Length: 220
Image (cartoon, one colour):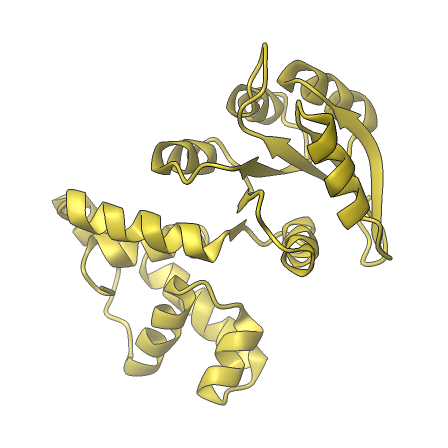
């Protein structure tokens, strides 16, 4: 079970040096690496056996890749939350991973503080996507796809001016605390605004809200 002071982690990557580097980065209070897998199949088998709180899952692995492993884990209804890792800023990989239920998506160039922060958030139930990569993806979506009538009609009601302020910062990838600092608000107020925004945009999480906001032109 996940607790605030102990998060069990499985590392899945076919490169031993990458696994070693991640293990070293995770050598911090509150984090416990309980296994390593070198293929997607091993990742699925070890998840079934060990039930880690979080998996750091490489996308490109032999035999069964990370996307296929993610799909198998979700189909098995395992409660482990999956953070996908990649060296490539692929829009297709990101969208497919999110559609299949990934809880996070990070680049392998991530810093240790950001990695630990991402794992904490994901273990606590918050989805996290590398904000630089997300910005590029959102810009690309905005260039290549006009908002469909279905997406536009999915917006339940207009956002207030303050909700728009919060939404703009949410799209930039800021955390609730960072938004609170920027707008001089209590973090509880920001959380309330975010919940309202998700409801009005009929979005299940922050990433989906950001994509919808870009798609319909609410945020440029």
